[in-house]
Length: 198
Image 1: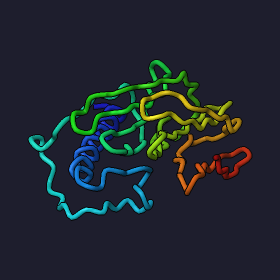
Image 2 (image 1 turned 60 degrees about the vertical axis):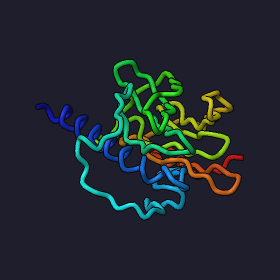
Image 3 (image 1 turned 135 degrees about the vertical axis):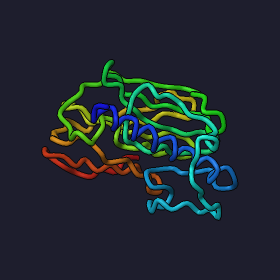
């Protein structure tokens, strides 16, 4: 098996495990995993459920995604939000997936210009962040670093261009909500900065 195929299988395996583990953790009162590494950024769920070894018979559902990515799923209520990139079609995707069934409730895609990145990175590395009204995401191309918001029905609310993105490894910073601000770190070889958006 080729190294790239092995990596894809490995990543898909971990996405399935991650989705499987998160489904029961958030099926009770805690139905929100709103950003990369969860509500407080520690990666620790507030749950008393004990994890066990994952076996094929334990998988509730699995889903073939339209691309690959390293972003983590985020959860709000009954839905997971996830980004991925189809390098064959050069399309960046954001998906809303029903948490209990694995059905895609909506998918939005954007044309994407690929660029140099680290072999272990992906073009969909930043995780989305979510609140009661919106799903926020970011992605970069050489000419644009975009930050955008959609509502929970998948309708575009706004999109902002932070300017060109110069990198040899690709983008990997996820947006974070703090009070009423969306914070983005534009960490790159070009002019780097941190911005808080209303």
